[in-house]
Structure formats: structure tokens, C-alpha cells
Image 1 (cartoon, chains in turn cyan, purple):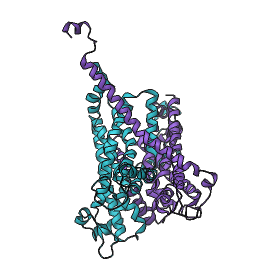
Image 2 (spheres, chains in turn purple, orange; image 1 turned 90 degrees about the vertical axis):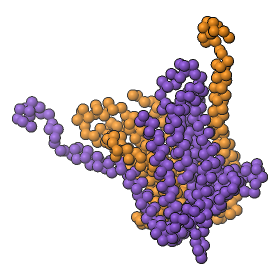
Image 3 (tube, chains in turn yellow, brown; image 1 turned 30 degrees about the vertical axis):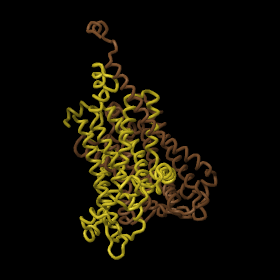
Image 4 (cartoon, one colour; image 1 turned 180 degrees about the vertical axis):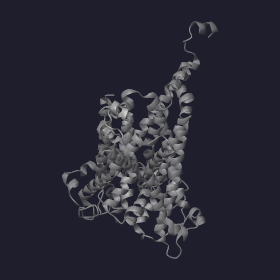
Length: 310
Length: 298
């Protein structure tokens, strides 16, 4: 700073001085940055640690053909253990599929009602109820499947076992619906009001406005919500463990018991010795689950953001 | 109807008009029924839990040990264990989560790096809970050597619920108007002084809402703690974070699937206490949020 400038500034403090506050500010900036990248560190960490534990199996007993195409999951067989997850994938897919059949129409319908028809107090009330539904823990849902749905299904359909695809599918559908409802509602709310006003000015009724204007405009957001619901169903563990019947089976009807990928890990990890092929095979299923949900979440995000940009 | 009539009264109802209105009404009722059908089963379920489990509730049930192979007695160790697990998880996740939100809201530029952090947060929230459990086993139990302990289980829970804290905090930080920041900077305050004196005090209740939501989420989680620190049955209460503990969520799983000859009401009682804890905290969070929305001055 020149002599003249210093005189002009009088006794103002020198803004370039590095006092305690300056160092604290810098320190906080680094700490906050470290926390900021924690999500990235953790997501990489999850992949690395789960892979490390499953690595031994991937290099020794793993055969792509057996793992994905064999329906026999018999890791405890003493002579010749087989590690085929085909039946487990069929279990997960059938339960998630039925859950989506239940959840998609109901959550879309509820979202349209909440976002477009309901107003004021009624709307707030519904939103709070739906938010509370989303809070019910999965182990409680599993217990409901076990103790309430199970006898109900046996009575209604006259089948010997009520722990099956139907039971788990309905439970999972009810679990996923609240989340899908709130995401779909957000997607509908994101459609600008001038779209609705323009359509109404042309003489459209509420339903015509929704059907011809709002739904097409919110298409991507709704699809993103459905994908997130699929991801939820796919990764759900406790409810599926308790309500499916946990029998290895390629299902022929909704009254068959099945076993899901997630439930297999939850049921067997406690019984295996650390580092054994069985233990490592369970971690390999974990890698598979992680990869699938990663892809689902990523595409959901890309789809939702795609619409926001354009 | 002739053309002249139409011109004379353009607002006259036509057949097309009437049928369109009827369709509208039909769909409105259909969607209302759907919303109702989504809520109805849950109300029935909650009522069943209260009817069948309500009789179990007593002071003794909440504050004594389970006895006779968990077929009698109370749930105190599980209740206390859940408090331990959630408490330690909060101590870990709240500082990290709030700091991460401060970074994202106050420091981060809008570029590819910030976008990848946001993507990582979304993905972290979507990782299946059983994969979090595997991570907890691989990282905290084995690699860091915590063994199966409250510490390992709580860290797993903290990782799992971190996105909840980050997202809720970021939202309440961003709700503070930019003018507040600019006014503070103009006074010569550093970024940190601005955050500590102006932004955090103005968003603390919003952060609290997120934290309560996280507590409720953490309370109900089962899969992540099954192999990292929660045990089926431990007759002694935990003394430190390196002990194992019982937990409410796992206890419900155990008494409803693993223990033979459990009286019918017992699992209902456990489920009722668990769901009451979760829903109470969730309602508190919602109520706080609504109160704040009404109070907001700017």
C-alpha cells in the first residue's frame, strides 16, 4: 500500500492482516470441506470394504455361470457347496414386482389427489399421514406380515402357508407407497402453474388438465419416483425376511414361499465363520446388491434432473 | 342445438361438457379412494397393535429384564440399548452431517464436484440396509477392530442416516436469506463468524427437526445392527461403547421369529412400544416444522 493510500484510509484496519480470526476461518473451511466430501468417501468405502471381504470368493470358488444361473444355493453342503443365486434373484424380483403392482397405481393416484384435488387442511392432513406411514420401521412391517397378514391370507385363500410372495408383496407395496407418493407429488408440484392455467383457459376440466398437461409434463419426475421405489423394494431386508417364508424356490404362483437376496444375507451372516467361502459368498451378494441399487439410484437421479434442466 | 343458440350463450352446457365433468368427478373420487386405501390398512394395523399389545404395557414391562428365555418379563435392556445405539450414532453423525451441510450450502460452488457430492448423498441414502450391515462388519468390526460393539453398530447407523441430517440441515441453511450473509460480510465478519453468529442461530430449529427425524429413523433400523453390535439376549446392561447390547428393533425380530413358546401378546407389546417411539418422534419433528413455518419472520 502506498504512503498516500495509507493516509487516505486513516485508522481503518489493514484488511490483509492475518489475525486469529483469519486462521480460525481457514481451519473451519478445511474441516467443513472434509465433512463435505464424507458422502463420497463413504460410498467408495462401502464398495471397497464389501468387495475386500468378498474378494477371496470372487477369485476362488466364484463361477459366473454357477452364481447367476444355478438355482441351487447350498453353501453348507459338505461335499460340494453350490452358490447359485438364480432362485434368490427370482424371489427378490417376484416380491418387488408385486410390490410395484400394488404401490405404483396407489401412490400415483394418491399423489394426484393430494397435489391436484385436495386443498387446505385436508391436503396438509393427508401429507402428514403419508409422512408418518413412511416412518414405520421395516421390522414392524415384517411382524405385521407374520402375525396379521399370515392368518388372513390362510383364511381368505385357503392355502396352507400365508408367508409367501403375496404377503411380502403387499407389505412391501405399502412400505414403498408413501415414499413414492411424496416424490410423485413433488414432481406434480414442480409443473409450473401457467401450464394448468393455459389448459384451463382452453376450457379443460380438472381431469383433462391433469391428463393432457400435468402428467406429460411431470413424466420424468414420476418415473424417477417409481425407480426409487423399485430400489427401495430391492434393498428391503427385515420385512422380506419375515414375510416371504424364506424358502429357496423359483416361484410358480403368488402363493409360493420364496427367499430374497437381502434376506439370505441377514439370515446366514451370523452363522458363518469370518473368511469362509460361505461368508465371502454373502459379501459377493452384497456387491451385487450394491451395484444394482447404485445403477437404479443413479438413473433415477439422471431422469429427474434431465427434466429440471430442460 | 343450433349454431345461433351457441353464439347466444357460449357458456351453455353441451353434451361433451357434461360428460367431461362427469369424468372429472369420477377420477376425483377414484383418486380419493386410492389415498384412503393407502392409509386405511395402516390404521387397521395400528389399531390391532394397540388392541393386542396394549394389555402388555405396564411399568414392569418397560423397566424389568426379560426372564424365562425371553417368554416373560420386560424389555428394559432392549429399551436402554436402543437409547445407547441412537445416542452414540447421533454424537457421530450430527457434527459431520451439519458440517457437510455447511460446506454444501455456504462454501461449495455449483460445479461437477459439488454435483458428485450430491449424487453420493442420494446414493448413500439408497444403499440397502443389509449392505450397510456388511460394510459395518468389514470396516468397523474387522478392519478398525471395534469388534461387535455399540461403537461399531452406532457408526454403521451413523453412516446410514448421515444423508438425512445433511439434507435437512442444508435445506434449513439455504432458507436463511442471502441478505443476512451479505449484511454480515459487509460488517467485516469472516465466513465462519457469519455462519456461527448469523446463519446457525437462524436455522438451528430447522436442524433440530432433521435430527429428530434421524433419531426416529435410527430407532427402527434392524439389519445394520444385527451383526455389528446388537445381540439376541444379554442379561447385563452395557457399561461402555465397547459392550454389546440388546435393541428394541432386534428384540421384536427375535421374540417374533426366533424364540419358541412366546405368549401371543408379548411381540405385540414390543412392536407397540417400538412404533410408539418412532411415531412420537416423527410427529414431534413434523409439529416443530409446522410451528416454524408459521413463525418465520422473513
